[in-house]
Length: 213
Image 1 (cartoon, helix red, strand yellow):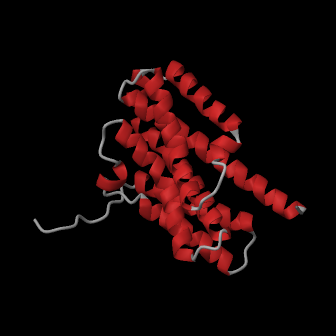
Image 2 (tube, helix red, strand yellow):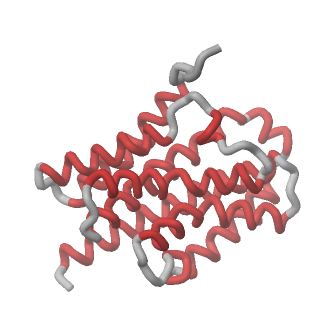
């Protein structure tokens, strides 16, 4: 394995680790809003952190799963769950409601990047790679909302979410089309997806309603 390949794999691992951490935080905060106990918090955090990546690996027939291959990440998610459950109070949660979107946006961008890239190098067409990035970036949040007994935000919120992930995937595909280095394509994907989601949240951008009244 050459140095460039090793560097690329290390960069992807760092993205995956950062995405997992961001979504773990998002899962913990979602569980705390529902006043779950420590077991519920850990389960919600695990599903949010690993749900999208696991589904990606199943669809791409990749083994072992990321969290099985890197068990230190699994231990880190458990530590984050217990730590935040101990440190974050109900009042802090209510005061910082809007800031809860930050880890979700970061996780969306980073997981979108890894999902798109792994599908791309597996030889999938660009549209399939983009959709795989969307699935990787959004499915953990869907599982979080279901466990929290809520309609998934992906399906009911008129503020673009999956579209932001798709835009990030398109940024990756465009970068690869012009033979940009892999790390630039990954960075472009993550920045576009997370950045566009942040803009949506800050400026409350909404899609027009569908259907007749």
